[in-house]
Length: 218
Image 1 (tube, rainbow, N blue to C red):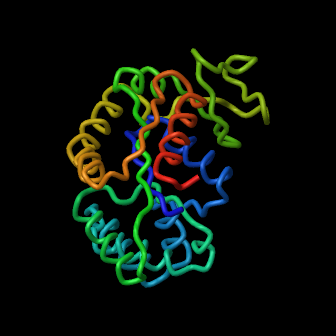
Image 2: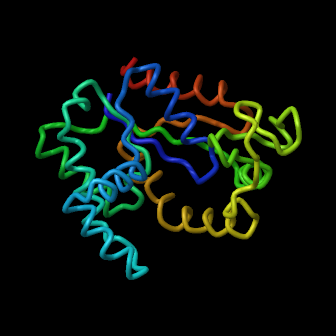
């Protein structure tokens, strides 16, 4: 399967992508991971991206698109993949179409993790992360056994600086403006599969699997 996963920041998109990756043995292609790899390895694309980042400028779509195209030439994608964080807008979606067309391929489905903004706000602002091992907790839904202490490694558990209401609201507004138009873009093609994550992850995954079955993919 060749999939895209869409969802607002804090929607549970990352967790859903991990479940799908493991269940269907897919390569998980995260644009965040791609940027980190290219920057760390000092690849030509990484150097080009850094030149913009050092100036405080946004990395142009063209650079991101070329990173994704390069990644889609790796042999592990032949078993199927899930794109996470790309495309982020219609221009990137059209570029992805062109990349796949050159390879004689097309997308099979676009998974959309649906979570209401007020639920995202509640979940994200109560999230806590271990400074040492990165384990994630939640003061309301999955608290640590000892307040402020990681259950896994004993590290210090803190609230990330960008998990405050003001930053979350800005991220949701940016998502709504740039990425939500993709929902209609793919819905018109008949390949959009929705998973409702307002209740829990199991409900979300179940509805996604039903949608994939409906498209004859599983």
